[in-house]
Length: 403
Image 1 (cartoon, rainbow, N blue to C red):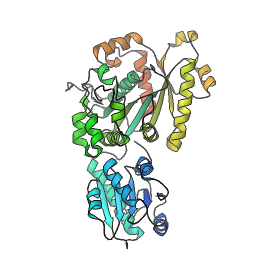
Image 2: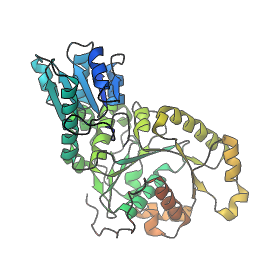
Image 3: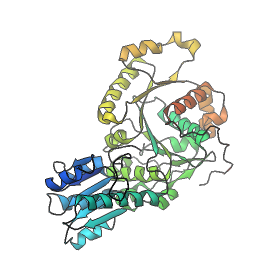
Image 4: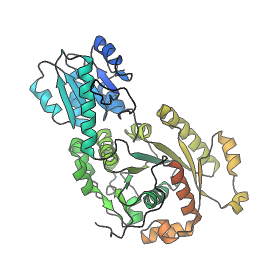
């Protein structure tokens, strides 16, 4: 899952030869200047409020010097809301309650005020290596977020089919589908899955979520896709905090190489943070004029939000088969109308979809030769980074789904 919060490879080495990560710093100007001489990616946090720092840099590496304005508030918030952050504190006499806050973080260290830039970089590299080794997985996972431009665009079905298509390519146990439609998500119902996510417990103490608790909240389908969903609750949207959702996704992306998100169409406190951080932001539309205009507007908004993270993908779902295109709006004409490229079209197969949901299975299990299945498979292959899919498809897992 790529974001400004994650550590960036390919940077210079510390005196010991270790890789030096990018670093966000709340420290004196003279120390910033010394650090920039060693590490080209040093970001000054002195003009940012603590909540903004958590959104943009939480989960990464932060240097905090005692005595700087807002240093204590930032450290306490990181400990509570984003304990996956690696923190280095510069202090000669750290208060006891700040030490307790540090102990809630996954990786941290304290350096004396006399420490020079080389000491800081050496500690930063060591903390980075420690975190990566502790996770036992690559530092980056692949995370895609699907969001509908209009209601009824078929996002949940498309997310499900994408997750299972991906699992057929990369193997069982590597793909997790997270349904973020917390109040009325359909993924669990469509697959006859058990919604195990305890949203109340997650929101009450996000920092307690770890890999073991996440495993308890996952339900695994017999075809090797794990599903995280919460029971339907009309109060769920108000209950879920941004800190809780971001912590959930942080731990999920550490546990699974591939994570696919079913996003709500309406804005939530965490929507912008998630769309800015994922590897692929996918807007799903239907091939109608109102839906296309809504999708184009949403794509432009998300493009601005993502900046250099990559353009938003536009997918047209439920399109007619090629021989029936004359009855609707041609794709080429649609692209001219909205002045935007349509990345993928997914053919409608209503009969297969209806049969699949009645059986609680993905469409590929019911009608593997459906044009919809072929289109989704092509979309997945197009979105997956080069080198992450083996030359041969893996066989289906024979494990039964467990409740």
